[in-house]
Length: 409
Image (cartoon, helix red, strand yellow):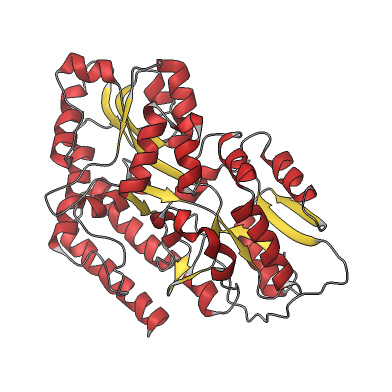
């Protein structure tokens, strides 16, 4: 089973294939609307979404898709056999090819209620193409008692984090766990954001063609070679076991682990965003959210839009249920996240604040798979092999420039 946390993987964005669509409006001869989901890992989600669909005024057929959802969806949309409504992340290529329809009119009544950083991940050229369903995010967990014993304050800068990880490494305990690859998969984005940089700028330029990017990634190398990182854990960064078993004093992982951490440690933990590198930077947390989208090739585009509006804009009780009854997620609607009892205290309340103040899309629409691969490979060489950051990033900047020219001309 695939978990919602896949959204935050560096390569998890759906590679929708180019396809020319046509909006043919209502119709369909009374057939049920077809709605697709990937196979969520949390028990009860499938039954919940089927229940939502059954309560709609018209027939809706829900299809659950175990396995490689991204490839299956892309193939079905390209062949014209795809669903009317489906969940996906947004890529600018799907917009450019006319494969999905804008949903500005669907979301208009509640647009201001959606967290701006989340909605930005579903927006291209000012138009919304996906209505966010649920928010996943990553953050830094720390063991309060371990920090107190070592006389270490929760870090607010990257240098403080490096120093804390070193001081907290003692005996059989390491200072930090950010994945068995040393953080290559999950910390590249936060490193850029810590220096006030980004993947791509709002005016479609490379967002990290700056010496500060090399400095930020060099800090990850410093962590890796300093002996304070846990490497080779039985379970990787997405599971909290290393943290709850006392193998590390700090771990970079996701919101979804909060219930398990609370069960194991009670109140003996806190959470933080990735800290800032310098005065130009800011703390940050990566966020991801599937959006409900409408297939431009559907023979019932308007019917499909009506259903998306009903489920993901009007039915706030279903939206809260979807986010908080099966696993642990943040509703993308501010009004829902603010009133949810499960999000009013402790680490959960902190996470809501981090998303409001420090969220950065982990896979923005114009950050293509080719860009992601080039950047992640460079981060791996810098962090694990000690490659020169300036030289590595120069190559990536060239690749990203080429991709942006291809997309935007």
